[in-house]
Length: 107
Length: 119
Image 1 (cartoon, chains in turn purple, blue):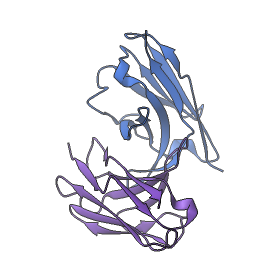
Image 2 (cartoon, chains in turn purple, yellow; image 1 turned 30 degrees about the horizontal axis):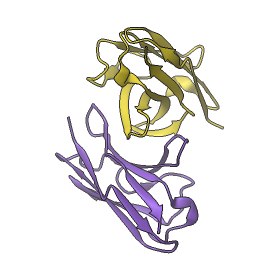
Image 3 (cartoon, rainbow over the protein chains, first blue to last red; image 1 turned 45 degrees about the vertical axis):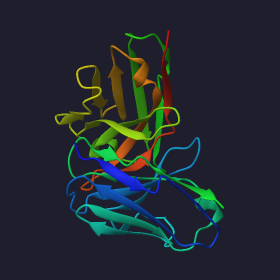
């Protein structure tokens, strides 16, 4: 199975900050890497697919990059509604696996 | 509007069975692969199972293989998860999720249904 490791596990940031979350795969997943946002009590929401493609309706302050084993989710200017937990997920091979999550909290 | 509505969750004793349903609307169900993903209380996301459009290709996570069975009824716009030999570690919110074809990401999610395995 491909293991996905996110860092950090949590971070505190202020509105307007640039935030970067990293996801590392235990082996190459090419560009088959997706990012989700989850708010408490809600279902996850797809933000980025194929490592860098922005899902329809997602604000352009979200961006993804990387390929192979190292990936990044960047929020260019953190907004109040962005405080949530973020997960990466590889769709290169089954079983599809998620990172452990990164909780973005208000500083 | 795409809608996925799960049902069938509840409290079940260890070793028991439960069948989850997911009713889809707002899109051509028979054109999309479907998945089940779960989340234990306070924990992260775990993919559980996948079913292809025709139902002929199915995958399971090792943690549920041999105990869970995914199926679909394209005439009823529904996907199901039959769960047997349930364990305490199966306690979770179960989400059905529509596959983003070609990328195997989870494009749309239901609101989830809680399964609690406890005596």
